[in-house]
View: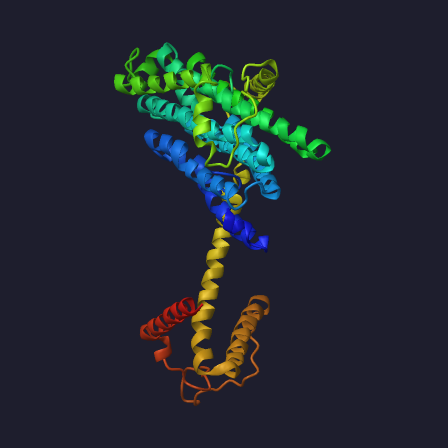
Length: 482
């Protein structure tokens, strides 16, 4: 931070910071580099998905936090950039989760959305400057809470998959009926992530929401955009409740379209014998931790936040936060109302057709298929062209000089022109006369003015290795001298 403060040209820091942000943002699953996360989760085993969501994505967040608390400490422009990225990630992930018909994909999109919440907290940490206590505590605690919650939900999804061999909501519909223990194991984390009071997720979301409210109050008339950010925050919280309600109702309240006898034979399970006691015991221990954190946040969660506050350059709050005050409960109530409305007006009416859950997203809206894969194919072809030019032009420039280069460029242009004319008119234009063989030869052919050597040193592997060695030596000398 001290070294960064001494840099006069901030553009240098921004160039490096943006490049690092792209790398860590991709690792975290932030928009627009979030596309790998919904694909990786369904393919990975349940324990790996838990680590992927709870640990690996947090390494990306760690990198963003290091940038934001050192090089860009209290930098308002950096904070606005993170706020924009966080808002889009937060809303987009929640919308994708509502529309998904795959259990693990829904949880993966949920992770994207929660990463957006954390990025918003990081943005407020930068924007609030010395008054960033709420943002610091909320960011730290939401990282912890999201990891704890997904450490329960992904293994629980794995338990369902071990029996049903599917993550499709239409296939696993009604699996949890008559399984109160599984309903408890999955229901509490779902409510916690939705920000229901009394659970740990409510605490961190309250702090993040209040940090936005505090910035709006401090900025006054200049915070119109952040009033919109507050609306998006509450809306995303409502969508969280909507997709978690969708999963819970599908698994534990609705009936499968197949008869019970066929399901019993297909799933090959009876009663509560669907998971090992040790697995259920581990998941229940996580629930106890979440309940302890959520029921007495002032005694437990504030201490955890204070432990990590120094690393993020945060200051202690001016006063203790009353988590269950009416003004703080209002935000949770608004999100709950939005979530209930989205579930009953959208999920139950538009996303269920003929008794089946449907995903209305058309394939062409897939960012990976419609944008990234074509761009990567183009870049690969461009790299091939550049490498070919370097291979063809390099030796000629080295041994024949610039004049000969233009001759080869003219030759290439003639070839391209001939191909175009041939495709349009069926004829090839050539100003050079055709050299024919003697009349007694049955075959007629056109010969090059100068015979070309089939194999030469400049086209050999040895010459390529020689140029590679010269390039390496030149690069090392440049590094040593500069």
